[in-house]
Image (cartoon, rainbow, N blue to C red; front, side, top):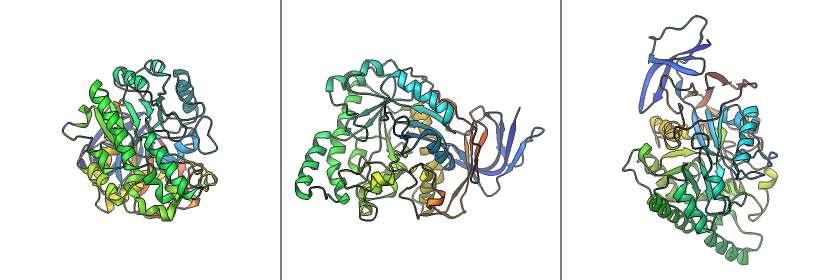
Amino acid sequence: MNSILIRNATIVNEGKTFRGDLLIKDEIISAVGPAGQLDSPKDSQIIDASGLFLIPGIIDVHVHFREPGLTHKGDIITESRAAAAGGITSFMDMPNTVPQTITIQELNNKCRTASEKSMINYSFYLGATNDNITEVLKADPEEVGGIKVFLGSSTGNMLTDKEESLRILFKEALLPVAAHCEDEKIIRKNINNYTKEYQEEIPFSLHPLIRSREACFKSASYAVRLAMEYNTRLHILHVSTADEIKLLSNELSVKDKRITGEACVNYLWFEDSAYDEYGAMIKCNPAIKTKFDREALRQAINNDLLDLIATDHAPHTFEEKSGSYLKAPSGVPVIQHSLPSMLELWHEKTFSIEKIVEKMCHNPALIFKISQRGFIREGYKADLCLFDPDDQWTVSKENILHKCGWTPFEGTRFRSKIIMTIVNGTIVYNKGLFTEDYRGQRLKFDR
């Protein structure tokens, strides 16, 4: 039996922060206790974590790793490595690939690929369309993380807009329905109006007016009405406006909610004045909105109206992003820097460290009922992250690991650094070095 003893860490878990030790045996957390009180089995690897924080591994339930079919932008090998360097131990990947993940067979194909390539644990959404609802409803709740539905078209153009199909989906789905909420008619009307005015030279600063707060709220309201009518387990992806927060509630604990909301790193960090500096580099769907919206999202994390933090990591090549507004694709690569950016907001006292762990580790596991992950608990899988709270570093081209080679965080100085990432009891990332031959496991769900 292989064992690792982590000594003298500052452990953050389930709302508490304390000095402690943690023992890993093979893939499992075997024991957790006060610092200095755990005995190490013979031949254990000892890690002195004095001065470091130990948290559960981050679970990112919203990524686009671009495989299959779009691997010039990113692939499972490169993006899972970048994720591991960012303290992420599990991901759930979206279906707008080539081919689209809209059949059980295509989903299983992606799982086979991930079993051969992914450095961290993995799951894949099954995508809903107007014509595949019967297929989607065949998904095994214990094997598939969720059903993705685009109520507004985005990268990959998987728009689902037939009310009959949506009603069947919301009525009969046994899995969480994860919804991209933007009203397509409003967006198309806005694009037409601004194209008449600007032709090909639409400023990127108009992106939040084209993919407007009205488009977000109307679509999210529709999704919530359907979910309430059919008691659907609905997860609203990448909430971007203060208006949408009004559709959410904090009256129940997260494990009992039927409707949950997600904040993404882009919307918690940037606001619309940044379009003048970053342009296409922060163009994502839905659009990053105003400073008022950003502050409302941050407050909603703290008061539990928003339930988790994900990335919507969506790489494109720099050349693709260099086009005009109508040509530059939407999507931002941020997975390597999601935890460091949220830790920066901890340093700024926007969030507590306990709240970050709740929203990035615990709640993703609770919302999607991920088995044996998301917490530091005896008997759970040993998915863990060690970070130094006071090791400053600057994002540069030399240390960006996304395959596309860029991020809007380039040049940002972070005050905390990820030191080590452990997946199923194996150290996969340690101070810049990777265990290249390790592969993660397919996530299971307690449903």
